Length: 436
Image (cartoon, rainbow, N blue to C red; front, side, top):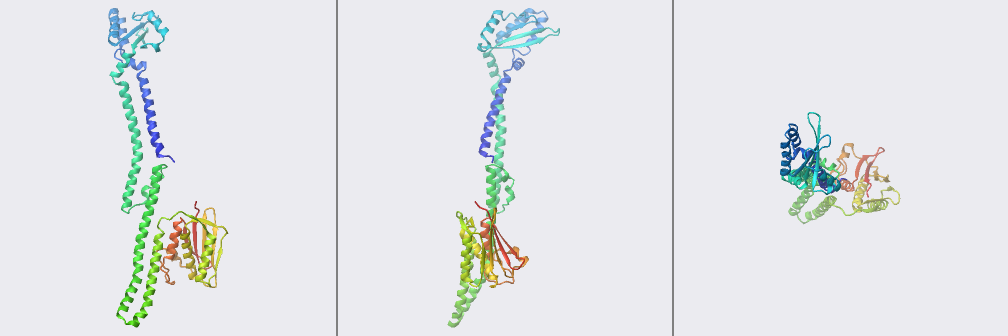
């Protein structure tokens, strides 16, 4: 993953390195002999002017021109012809010998040479000696080195800062828009799909936010649907209670005595319905740490519990010993218990219920098969919806058993699938992914 921290740190360091390198190159360029010859006012066009005076025979003006240059710009000049004879007489042979003996690096001046060829093909060598103080003052007065270095540094830092700023502010702007959409309950997962592909902290944040947004939207949608379904399902028992209470108020003692069991039954049904609704709502809450579940022991316990309620039913379990799964024991037990109870409701007593467990490298699969009438194909896709009961079958329960089982399996990241068995009966398949 490309860390945003290292990206910012690298951008600043790269800007400093580039700025330093360009400044160094710029300073070196300003110190080049050719650049100084073309821009210094004491050297620019000096050689051609002096040569034109000298070749025209104006020896004294040419010598005066040399002296003027020395007084004004503190530049000493020596001109040599093809034979090495000095024409300017300003630098003596003694001073040249002294210069070679001491070395330039120890002298307070800089030497620059320039070769000029006249129209007749005759060459002249100009040797300039410029004081370092004069050269530095000229560069500072013209603001060449500091100003150019400053402008160059500002340009480099501005460009890199702009790129770095855009790489951070644009994703943050998208996240802000996504937060706004989430607050308006109009969030869509496509809003941050492109940003979530980034391999840095902002990409991870976008992916987590996208997951959170989808989760919240699903919870909001589920809660709204549950609220509508609950309000619809509660009307029937409440209406029956109201009717029974009205009859009890108008009836005599004998009539009230016959109505009390009916009222008690309706209250029990209402309490059972509320418990189912609360169980369904708790599945959406954040669960505690997962635990290792012994699947074989869990199924044997469910079989023993079922034997107390349906002693005439037979349950066959095919599960390897020491089969385990990392999950939430109470939630998984509730899901499997609801599936087993649903199978017991429709399975004939003469046929056993088969529970088969297979463990693969990708996860765990649990199949619960009964030998009942099955479900019409057009209703299979609606099994597990809130308060859905298959038309034509017994109307026991409230249509929340399979919903709770489906939600519990999805809480583990798995799937609950329903199908009719080719040889008759109904099969509920629980697919649980491998967890760490």
